Image (cartoon, rainbow, N blue to C red; front, side, top):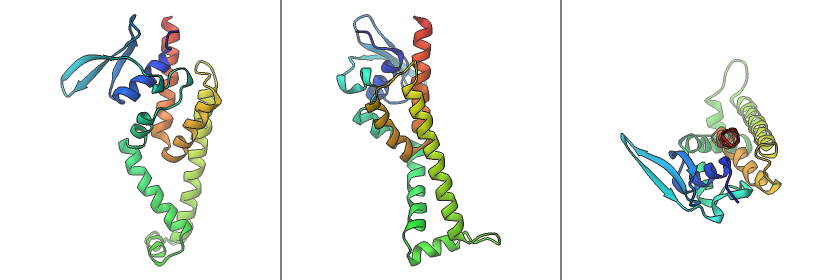
Length: 178
């Protein structure tokens, strides 16, 4: 059975990272892509592994590692952890950090709680969008794939949601070509 556009993209991300461009399935069932380093670009190919996502659209372990170590995720996760510490751990250092945000309109602690609520609501909305994209055509991913992507979206947020949207667009492009 031939891999679809989203499956080729997912396998390429697992194998070569997010910098791989123009991924396509060759007649010999290998995936060919372009990898660039500065001005030098080269065509590479690989044989997709069963653990690269395939028909299930599940993120593989290397892909999960790539998703949580993206620059935006690396910047966001410590800040979200700090905000969580300020809101949920009543300590002198946490109170001192919250006091830095004091304003005439609200205390720093209140601002941190509202920021936490806003962050949680935004990530829940992103998880709902990613779930809808994964479950609807053209992807029609199984529930197990949705349950694998949803925690990543809840923790990391937009960097992962954007990859889910790119999976969908790769699938749509491949169906238009067919």
